[in-house]
Amino acid sequence: MEQAKRTLNLIIISFAIAGIVGAIVLTSVEISEPPNPDLTDGAVRAAAAFGAVGLLVALVWVARSGERNVTPNRLLMGFVVRVAIAELGLLMGLLGLFSTGSTTAVYVGLVFFLVSLALLAVGLRRISEEFA
Image 1 (tube, rainbow, N blue to C red):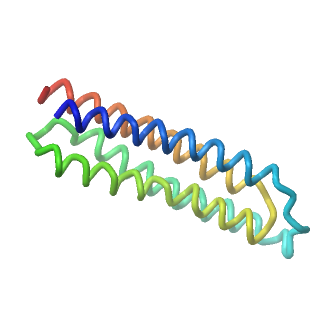
Image 2: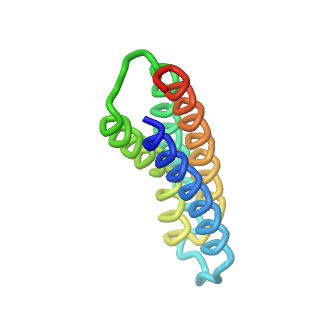
């Protein structure tokens, strides 16, 4: 279980760093004029909606973590799936950046993603205390 915990902590750190660096680099690159700035609100709403779903998944996992004994393989697979779901808000924000040229959607998705990662890390600590 300790090896699984180290692997998942590495995943959390690498995804957080990659998300931050990716968002900063992509928003600093000059993209052509936005084709339709009216779509910016929709891109922000989409990033917020998908980010909220990822946050909800992370909250449910934190609330349920430690309730039952799981194998390290099942823990790894479930955690990676939850990180992928949490990442959808950031990916929608990047899609909004490319389609509208607005950086707001990227930052909204990034905030939801980082909060979801923090919650997943809290749930991981809870599991390691119970079953270490």
